[in-house]
Length: 101
Image (tube, rainbow, N blue to C red; front, side):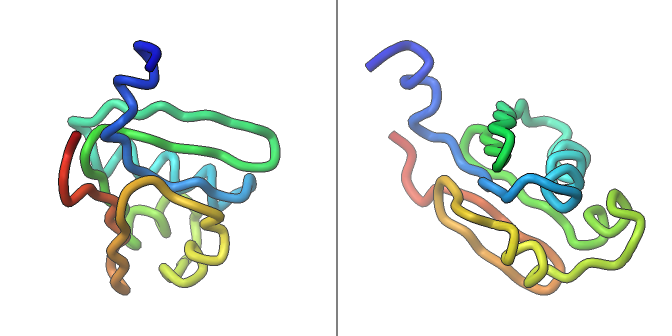
């Protein structure tokens, strides 16, 4: 295992189809989780966002970043994958681990 892989074994976060929703999710994640450092990989067709252990995104923050209302099911449509587990409500989306390595 390389050093960069070692640091990522407890990573969580979304992988989103590139576009305005992905851009807004990246901004909102950073606002809603100010104590977290994120690794953001822009791969042209998709954007992978990872952080250690747990992060969440609030629907209210996401709507603010987009400049229009958005529902969490609309985010789910753009969510192609994710690392960790996911919990979704009308108000937020949470990525987390039940057990850390």
